[in-house]
Image (tube, rainbow, N blue to C red; front, side, top):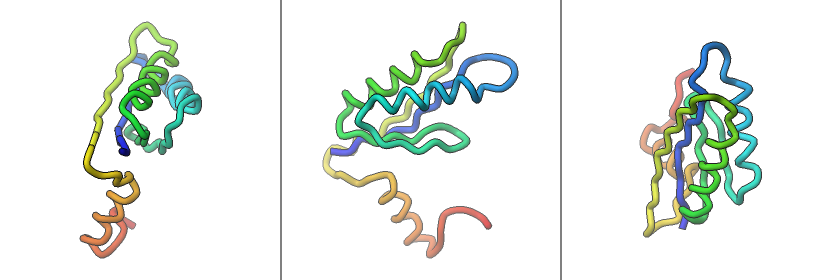
Length: 102
C-alpha cells in the first residue's frame, strides 16, 4: 500500500518562515518516506499510515515557534499502490502535455 499526503507546516510569525519550514522538511529524513517540497507544501509517500503520521508529527514538532500551523491531507488508497508520480502521469496523458504552463 502507498499512502500519499500533502503536508504544510509553518510557524505563525511575521517575516520569513523559510528557516523553520526547512527544519520541518529536514525532520522527514528520519523516516522511511519519500517527499518533494513545492511552494505550497510537501508531498510525502509512505508504505503505511503509521509511518506517514509519525513523519508528519516530527515535522510539526521540529518547528520552533510559539504557534505552529499544520495542514495534512491524506490519500490512503487501500486497493492500489499508485504513486504520486503515477497520478501526475495520468493527468499528463489526459492533457497530452505536462501539467504546467510555459
